[in-house]
Length: 171
Image (tube, rainbow, N blue to C red; front, top):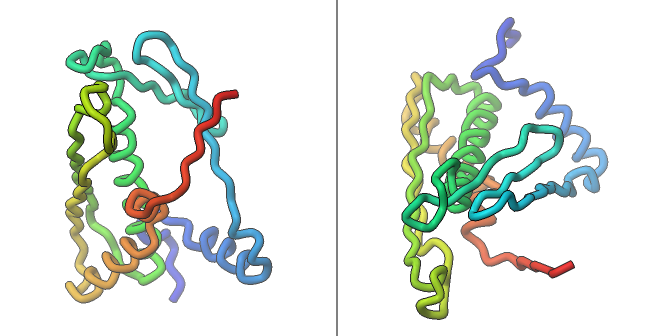
């Protein structure tokens, strides 16, 4: 089947070329990503990723910030949602499933006791939930299979759902 427009506005040919390159040389699957964060004063900082504009971060006023930007835990939720959106777009396109709309609502619960130094223990999210709102003319069975493929292959979802080593060194 040949189409004049890209399904879901995804360049599936580029993704296919990457898949072919990795099949020919599995070392090409090993990638490294980086971010560089600079403190701006108070609870404000900026993150620089590749050649993109800096992304600001701050805390809400209730946590001592000036509420000029999303805080790191909100950015983490957004990263998960963005990763899932990429997964839905890529996998739907590869399966020939048109997407009419996609919205992912994310929530996470954190007990601030540890962050505020009031007790020791786990400082991160106690739980994260994502509710996927997807509309498509595809059959329900195809959408369920799509959902399974996306959740089974989300790099950010897997990173958050699995204990991985995190090493933080003082230079």
